[in-house]
Image (cartoon, rainbow, N blue to C red; front, top):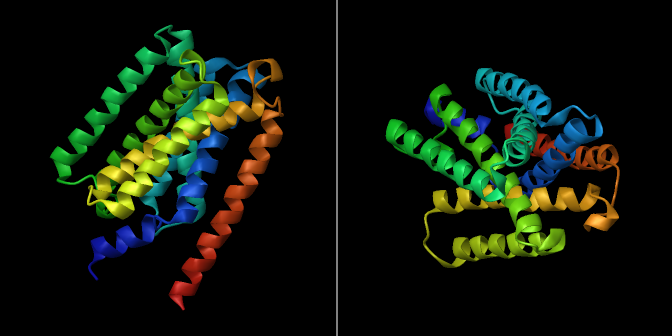
Length: 252
């Protein structure tokens, strides 16, 4: 096994069912956590975005500097991308007034541009080729755009499209099931399916997060953003322990 392959295996988690459960939990946490800072703490979307952007930059720097895959650091970086994605999308959609459709269109264009530049520069956007600092930067920037796009899509579906949070959950769950079906029963590019699923889990998390913490008269459960975030964080930490246990078993 060469150094590049070893680096990739040890720094990027295996894409399993546990990975997707953690991804959905992390994106839901990004929604409740982002709203807790921007709304419950009354800091606003711009200040919230600035705070989470700094956390995101520090986390990505630490992730790139790490010599091997560290589950806690990796998932902390994922959470950082989804929280900054939440506040950034809300700032663009609501504070700048470009609306959900405008925000989603702009972010989709940025996501495609990120993937195109990544592919043109390194020749592949497959996750298993993320074996250098340059590739990692593309990887995390693309993820950040996908998380922000997902927030806008979730809000657009639940609010502007009038489907509500329950309807949004159904729509994105069905779309994810179609991706799963394509994975098992077609020869569709695995890279395309991965990024499609990665994008779709974000709006699913967004509508679930909104369903948990929005007022009853708005169709939510009116749960505390802090308590919902704590439960989600506990779930993610439990899954991280599973990751670390499996990694330890492979080393022996």
